[in-house]
Image (cartoon, rainbow, N blue to C red; front, side):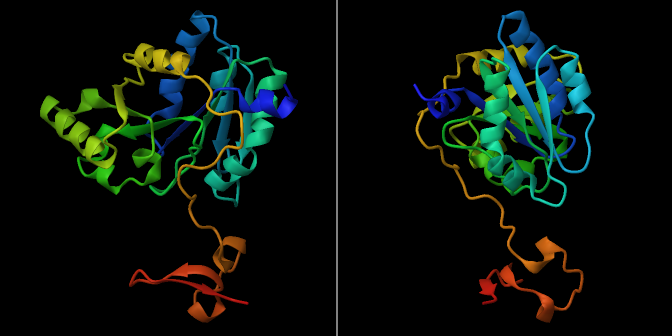
Length: 242
């Protein structure tokens, strides 16, 4: 088996969600359970400008790699660097790769066809929030609901129904980021996940657009200064340029 086939056969778990949803907290509890079961995950943390989450993960005794996307869309950055992340996990003799990507807009779409896609969503964000979420929820295999202890049972049920309306095929897990309740169920899902095809992987959904003059630093506001793939207020999309 070639080195590339070895890398592609490594189970890949991608964690996505909005800022403050509790992605890192639920991962800390879940990884502790995986470690107690003698699993050897490697973790990659993707953020925008800075993070100290790698310190929290390193205390768990697992290999951690940090990537800062800076001016680049975190989704584009994580997708572009996925091979390097897999090589990092392989060099550290990991049995799986867990990647937590930065949460920005609701249009994030980081999952590949062969990964286990995990969406983390905050139940206090309102009952209509799942309907506003994009592919990071509608394309997920597992939806982790956090902060459920802060709303009523009726609100939890409504929130769950809204998730299923957006993604009828997903598996929903309630996890408390403070005490780790529910993390054992999530860890079990991680352990039972096997890598998909060892061939070429693809995205489940196209990533957010990042092709315009604003993306490369243009600060003037007038429309006449802008080129690239643009969308107007009426919803019409156009490409302006050569």
